[in-house]
Image: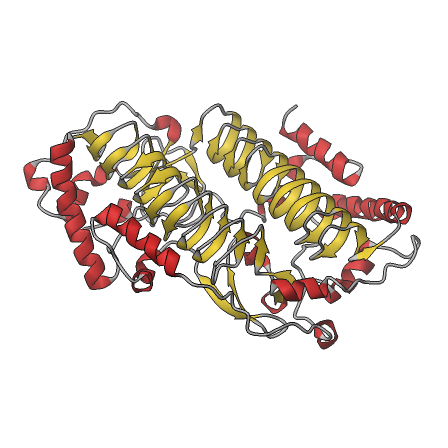
Length: 524
């Protein structure tokens, strides 16, 4: 089975029939990348290179993963090239090429994709891990299959246009659903099955517009609505958006009474202590308080912002994956969302139910929880998305994580700060991006299984290394050259001393791993 066959199968599973060829829906499916991939040109061959991020500086050089020579020999730095930080970076600058088309592990049949690991039949996608039959999608992980036009999900199958979810099956145009199946145009539903055009439900079945129906009536109306939806998709090559609702009318806001002023109270002291520990391990010196280094930690991470919800409560949100699509006038706290879920729209009988009619009424219930809190979380102030986590501060999405701060998305992490996009299985690290299993590291990008290293890109199996690009399995290395412990620690001391001076004086270094390839040696 190829991708087009998988697409047709998925359409049959969801809609009860096919709607056409996969590539005919490319524009529609591509809309739902949280972070769209970019096409660059290789500095080696000039061929196209797919890069799963736009965080790299203008003018940076790129190389395709299949062009990387992992055995290439480089010269060690000369004595006149180790005078200060700028001289070191200048001497190594020709080695700073960012890799795209990265395919790792046991992966096959991958086309126009980046950062794919142990995955099969992937097209026009990036950041796909242990999954198969994935197209026009990103951040798809952990045994997902038959996924199209979706992002930021784990353990999902037969999905089209999904934005955020876990353990879901046979879903279309949904967001933030967990442990759900057979969902159509639904937002923030947990433990639900067989629902259409519904919002903020918990443990419900056979619902349309939040109205629970007898099974037989639900299935009859569902069949009619699916047929209309197939016809609409075939004609327009797109469907209505789950987030396409305007400013709520007064009547839609009436009757919701919840306590105001809940901003996600909590104590950040535990995260503060973890930040001190992380900086001691990396710099040899504890830095404190964490808030003093907010600028340094927030240069790449998506900031957590304060908002007033549609109903007047104070809360926080992060412009990350599903939330970037949410109409600002329809944001709600968790408690407000649960209150709106008590409402339902009028469906009528089989002869009166129609897609257009139902969507025209959804303004009554279409409110979006930006304070997601599931799984027994504790002490996580100013963190909009919390899932089995504790003691974090200003994290966009904390999933199975603890003691993290000023970061966008962490999964299975401990004491990670200032990182953007997805960090997995990592600890005591600062300003790392798209990394897996890094510890005591700083400014690492697209790296795996690295320890006590900094300013490295597309590396695996490093320990005690700096300024390495596109290399593997090295220790005490600078610029891809192993120096031995004594010489490495001498040069590292020069680098760390100047980094601390810049940080204490200016609150930043003046560069990071994502613009190192364009850095011209101007001090902060």
